[in-house]
Length: 454
Image (cartoon, rainbow, N blue to C red; front, top):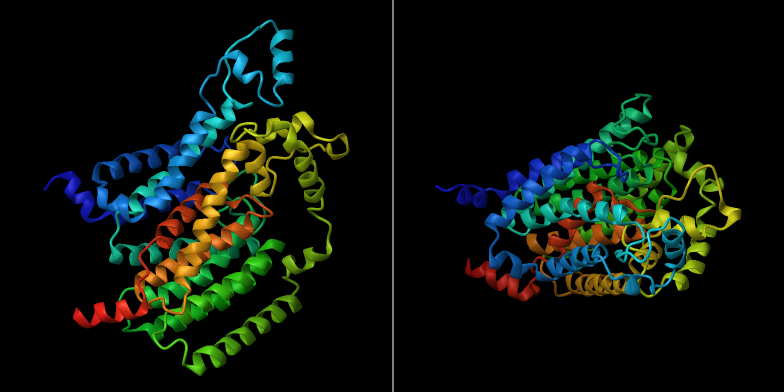
């Protein structure tokens, strides 16, 4: 048996190993993290192996995701292509670079579109992690996706465990600049987003886990238990956005469970009793956590804390006409923002990201980046309409599709006030969710007919 055949028969094990490396080395967004010396070579090696075993059938089933990701890679690479002086110097906002070149005697030299090529090159390298995960995930069969779900849930729970240790007073950390109770990630907002994902992941595992319909009640009980345990962990992260994501996680967990039941539209118990009971337990847990004075996220709602975000967003909106339509170059936010940063916002620290992905994409990627974002958004809306229609099947692939869409929605909401997907961990999670979202969702009648024939 050739090495290609061996890898093709068990891509889940290679993907699981890669995800373990990602979760222990990819929790930060800083380009200076030494862990990247391990992570990126591992991701590139896994991507190379995945390309060896990739088939046309694998690509055909997930062509939308591959096309969008390929377009993002191409756009980033194009921002690094050297342009003639007459071209790049005529781009909006490049006057200051022309003046600097003239002052130091460089003259009319060729430069790329990006105002910070090193940062853009780092952004291009960072795409190797989701690329490797994507190329491996599209090669999995249904059983492989079931196992992948358990692997992802286990790693998310591991991050929750380390967050619990940190909340209990342990000084275990993975990065020099790491907030409290952030688990395997460096940022508590990103940790809260990952914890909120445990809820729909657990619901999906209860429905689509190994064993099929057998043992589903026990898996459902285990999923509910995990969901209950996650609530106080989100509260103690101190993440205000985590409260919103927690609520959405509960909603998507309920929708995934409800749509995964064959008689979902007729069972009054599934529609009323169980959701009310679960909600009551959640409210009780929140109350207990508040009384125990561990409600950091709720307490921070009354603090100004991150009040600089609104004026920063306004300043970015003011900058956009200066750099449109092509943007400043993907990954060049820090350098581009500092050129036009208002004096009133100057601080000893610097703005490392816009904390709003739409604004940062508009500033750095311009109109092309916004077009790609709009296409991805359109695909998300179409996917949600298809997967949560009344006629959608209750099969395992349909459950995984709904789960993937729910995770993407959570990441979209989290990206409105932060930048979780810029961490390798969350970029890998997004790649998996995108693959799941594009799994086939048959109409319920067609699925019933297929099962009756098998």
